Amino acid sequence: MIVTAERAGVVDRGFADYFCCPELFAEFDIAEAVRDDGREGFFRFGRDLVCYGRAAGETTPTPEGLLPDLLASVQFDDDVCVLPFAPTQVAESMRRERYVRLERQSLHKRLIRQLYYLLRPLLPVKLRRPLQARWLRGWQDRPFPRWPVDTSVDRLFTELMRARLKTSGEKQIPFIWFWPDGKQACAVMTHDVESAAGLAFTEELMDINDRYGIKSSFQLIPAARYAVTESTVEKIRGRGFDVNVHDLKHDGHLFDNAEEFQTAAEQINAHAVRFGSRGFRSGALYRNQEWYGALRFRYDMSVPNCAHLDPQRGGCCTVMPYFVGDVLEIPVTATQDYSLFHVLKTYDQTLWREQIAQIAAMHGMISFIVHPDYLDHSDAVRAYETLLEHLAHLRAEEGLWVARPDEIDDWWRARHSMRLEKTAEGWKVFGEGAARARVAYASLDGDRLIYRF
Image: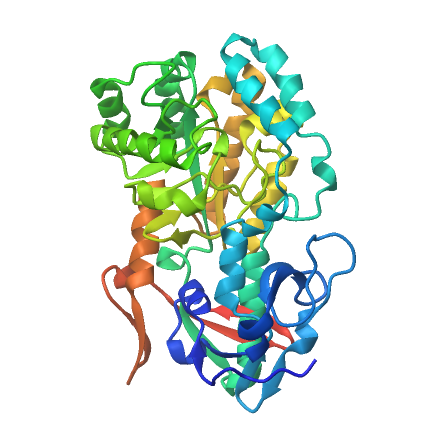
């Protein structure tokens, strides 16, 4: 297919923000057909990178089967790279889970979900677990997002960086490194407190974390299940841990109705003030990113990377934080403890180690949810301590930055506001927090993209 450029030198905001590079290196030409009759759907960009968004040329409504490869439609004209899609739009379509709109939940399933949450307070845990497993049947067969970690957005931008290097005439392109002090990747531990028993275990859990020097965040339910007192919040925060708001009632209905959500959001915002919290996480990771404007938080932690084992399907397809309006999304990128222990029925570390390795290879953020409620026996505690030991080892030996959500929020916002300028001494970072920033360079080794400081 022959495509023509809509205009030359268009800065792609998504690419520029992902790498925090000078805008002159983030210029791409977009095919006119994307604007005129671009169709939203799935396509490939190379052999095994599946994307979803508006594109010129053929797309498909589902990710199954042989997808059209739009990499063949990219044109290189002197120092111009002409794309059959707008990178920002495609990345946002995946991050915002817009591909899920094609998979409307049946009335039958909606009724089952409503009945489940109506009866949930009466159901013992032993009965809930097989019901949840039945709900998730067939998860292994879902081709998109890719299990156990989906890096489609990240790989899209790295493919575009490779294309930009080929057309720019530059041997290397400078950008602001992803993490402070040159850290190679990031990890964050979070704890959702779901019951009075879980709340009672928080102090012991903080002791366990402190043995490995890993601070975390506790998400507390403000209006159901247990009472959150001022002393509880002060005790957690006084030991150097974050305190965030966890849903309103954790009843599975927060995002059922737009008008009711607005009312609930006002109450949630008031509890955020009471807790002194910057962050929010919904119950069971139910979400609608289009409604986040009603929440008065700096960051959210409700979007899974790949939601195959969660009640709501989807996934943001990235292992990096990203902005939803003014809210920073800190996605959940590793399998939850509940899913590992009670759905997959294992305390083995293999899956967590595989996810850690894949995310670290992309220099991404490894984000965990471990509930104090499920650390109720020795096998679970031992599995958790083994995980902490591994993270502490990677911090000491592999340059892993283990941070609290508040710290990630501070860094990602600071990095987003920094600027990279060329001086007589070379490229230099300017802006608040620049002392912790590092200038990195992307270059090609043959056809392989490499980064260096």
